[in-house]
Image (cartoon, rainbow, N blue to C red; front, side, top):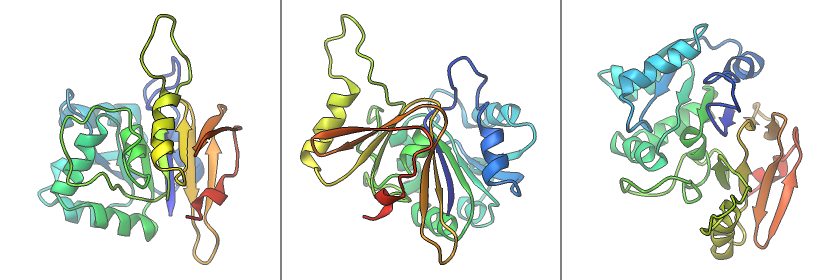
Amino acid sequence: MNVLMLSSSKVDQQPYLAQVPALVASHMPTVKFWLFVPYAGVTLSWDAYTQQVQQALPDLQIRSIHQYADAKQAVAEAEGIMVGGGNTFQLLNQLYRLDLISLIQTCVRSGVPYVGWSAGSNICGATIKTTNDMPIVQPPSFNALAFLPFQLNPHYIDVHPAGFHGETRAQRLAEFCQLNPTTPVIGLREGSTLYLNQVSQQPSQLRLLGERPAALFLADSITPLPPLSDISALLIA
């Protein structure tokens, strides 16, 4: 497998998807044609979403899955799969509706590169139970692509704004861990990327890319993960 999971589409004041070209060039240099999955987009049309991504990545060829007559054939023939952010429930629901979950799993596990950001990263975990999004639709299951045997929380932030009296992100994730004490959750700060790489006959590798730390939640503990950490041990379910 060759999977990039970005926390967000933007980092600070950088342009949209500014970090993607360098990541793709470093880890997936031979792929120029990408099948884009815009299903997480709700307030933005899929045509507009695709155009936005293509404009941000002019050196890559982007075509959206919704522009094909046969979504399954589009996935089966894809050189690379790119899944955008938006609402995670809507994204997963659409993948189930079109019966694409197992096909994407098969393609990526056989070597088709995958790039996701935000919701597109969230579905790389075992389930979407630790998404930040509202359940605006109800998928048949919360089970996701499961490239990772644990949970992700993109856009993780541990700042508690003055005057805010709701639960913090850490408190919400602690609730999950209270009921699922053996399942790790990685809180990915904006600007952070997880890179999963598995070469045939070699152990899988999982690294934290970028300049910002992540947070590992497990049972009652929160452990900082420094930038460039090798966290391959978490792949052993």
